[in-house]
Image (cartoon, rainbow over all chains, first blue to last red; front, side, top):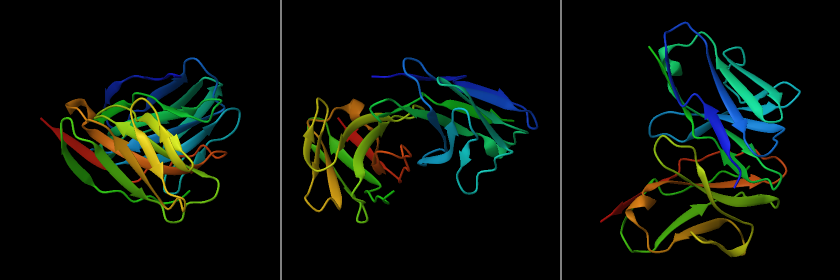
Length: 114
Length: 110
């Protein structure tokens, strides 16, 4: 099946700094990608829909100025957590649908904010 | 996007068949039913998808009754490595958007 990668796999940062997470579709193009956040022992929560060439669509309650999304190409979307705080510590996962509408998920990025 | 309801957890033993039922009472005509598996600290992995009746692949079967208000994921002869969280989703093909419910935490014991 198709492969979606994320980088980095884990990151530790200081409170107040910004962190960028990359999501790449390795062998297919994706005009749409999705970003999720998952807290320990909880389900995935959809944060936003990343659209290539246009603005991202954010779910209710997700601050767009806090979580900046850029879908720079058909294979890359980035999520930047700005001015990170300890409560932003979470597991961030992206996904992308292939041409058959099957969603493939990245391996996730573990963010720890000190 | 239909809301789905699943048992929070299930226990089983190696070699047994496990059936996880999901209810989606307000499923729309265009919604598909998809199941994902997630191991700790990993992204979800697609297991199976169907629209109606029965679908089978190399890892699981999916049973969907005629009214499509529920579905059952069947895992034959589970092993310890099947311990994971299983998510049932009802989603519309054209929207791509997936909304995850609480999932079922399956524990397979030796």
